[in-house]
Image 1 (cartoon, rainbow, N blue to C red):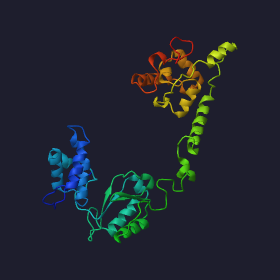
Image 2: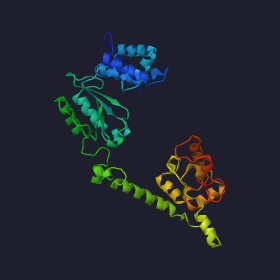
Image 3: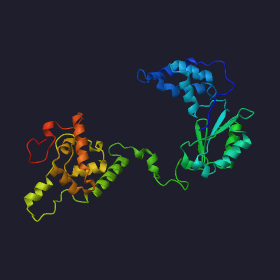
Image 4: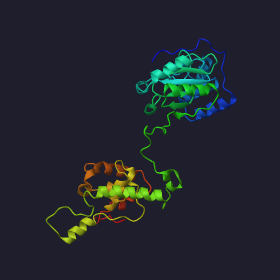
Length: 347
């Protein structure tokens, strides 16, 4: 990054308005005692906003005194971040992205428009309306090429639409930010591919119990869970030469749903809503059940849900941690292992 220096013409002093000073003190309170200097960025930004969108040297010293910082430390921050303008800017300050995605999509042509209609980079136009500067990536690559004008993004530009945009600002019109080619935000240029159902944007999308959207979500979760479960049926006994009905019944009832509320198993890393549904199908509803699995239990679960093979040990550790933290809904210690047929396993 090139060296950034303060403007040679500086005001004599700077002081926050009473409103901005009160705001700054509230920002300082957000940080722990002894860490209040972390508020330097938002306070510098407010100083820039107060001073016609550029940051003079007296404002840097004022903020340093307010936060009890050395002048050089705040100077380093102000000159490092290009969000701080160190010289006067126009009423509409244009930051033109010249990073690779925008360059490949035509930012070089936009720079030519700026040079022709505004003048050299870093200068304010004679009437004080515009100034411009080339910056690094602004994070809107999918809508390249783009510019930021004051606080708004204007995207999907061509030299013609960019020139029309500047003409509108010059005439005092309010120009709509966002894509300038009719694109819907960052949707594909050919049009949206998802979330195209009009009901999504009506009252039909309410997720209260019994609503169409909630029912659809539940069906989706159940369908995904069924796909997990069907790999090996949760009630299907392992392949064995024995067809003893008693043995088969024992396998089917290996875990029984405990009484009381179920735990939110999705808090365990690697278990999503569909996986939780599949575990529920096996009779597993509590952190305690998972945390007290024996090696035999884990093998039994992995046999029925083979896509999770090798991950059940991690689930056990996380489940134990959730029990130790006293998570609401976790069973008491004498009820957390409820594998049928073992002492203390009834809930």
